[in-house]
Image 1 (cartoon, rainbow, N blue to C red):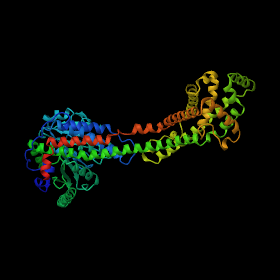
Image 2 (image 1 turned 90 degrees about the vertical axis):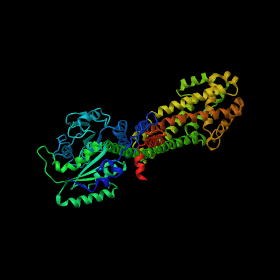
Image 3 (image 1 turned 90 degrees about the horizontal axis):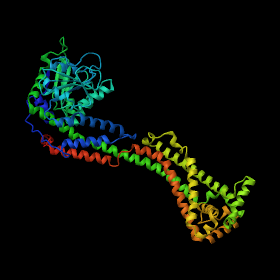
Image 4 (image 1 turned 180 degrees about the vertical axis):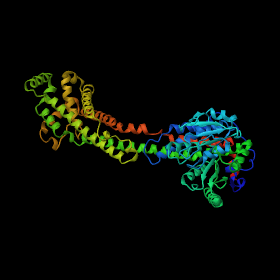
Length: 606
């Protein structure tokens, strides 16, 4: 094995752990406590990320959900436990493509067969962590990668972390053999990415045949963006092509701003009976790690650099999450507005129906003219005897009294109108949501139509309104003595007249073409009622009855709109979710600078 290039000159500040000589001593950041501390700020950010959801089907939603999960994992797996123990052993995560020889390399470096190696893929089904026996307690207690179950036996469970000790591995250093980054198993790929985000140092293993593959470079760019310390191993290189391939890989690293990462080249070679590479092949890399393990300051510098890089990368990542949360909220507001607009239109249609006289056509007009034309209105205002007479007539003829028919016609006309506008509003809201990607994901076919019980609720609403009109007449009639003298029957008749007034385009009894027939008796009835109650009193009764009806209609249609609105209410993030994420990220950034972790990076950039 050979080292391509000079690690001392290629590592620099961003890859301080890769130096051949130990780096300068690094001052450990002061410990802080309380909400203003870096751990406190990170815990607050963790809470803010966990509380924000992205359920609406928007282009940014999937990415935001994946990013939120990745950030949460990194906070739990690495940042919080590492900040709690900056002096813990350095964790080197060994990652790479399928068949790159990661497990064989790890076994060779620790001089023991601790990780399964073979031709079957995937070989590493669960991650294997190997450390010196003196460091085992730190990894066994589970602060680092707490979501993985510790085990001392090999396992096929990808969520199990197989802990192995190797006396040949120097104390202060641990290797984690991760699953393949391009594994055919989805769970293995996801776990490999998660483990790499928990590394103090990435040891990336690739081969002469696969070093230009796209997947490794995506992860390498991600590592570069987070400021992680990286070292590269180019494995299985034919002797005759070593210089050419190494030079090409070096150029590729430089193009990706990774030129300071050290590159170790392993030639094609044989393995011994234990499956280990010859010591002469691995010696340069093993010596490099041995020097790193022996130098406390060098390890601290690696930890500080990777830790600060991960912290610095939080702010833009959280800003993206905040933007996605804002988009979720804006989409939910837009969907709500489409629904409210549809049902506001329904309310306006009802209100216009009360103003333009359309509700007086047909059955209602016929029953009103009959009620007035037969003289029943006058008779019922004259004496209680009218009530007894109507009972007798109804019993003999089997036909309801004109007052009852008029009341039923008013109810039927209103219910028909309400069913129509509710149906149009539901269809409009449904169509509006269907045209929006976020709305389409929330729809249920039943929403295209009014609620199944709408007719019953509409009938009950109209009957309640009619009773309310009668109570209004009883309580607020102009001549209380008249109401008391003629009792409930006169109140009923007057109430029907007020209901008709609500349907009119004028203040009281409608006139014009709609009442051309029987207009004389209509005007006469109006004159009688106005004489009894007073013109202003009748106008006031009609206005109050109209307002009451529209309020009830608004409530009825509001319940219909809530079928849609409840879905966005369940899906929408908190109103200040985006700003909350930004504030939490800002507190982390402030605490990062106060902690001193960023000092070395800032010094290197000057």
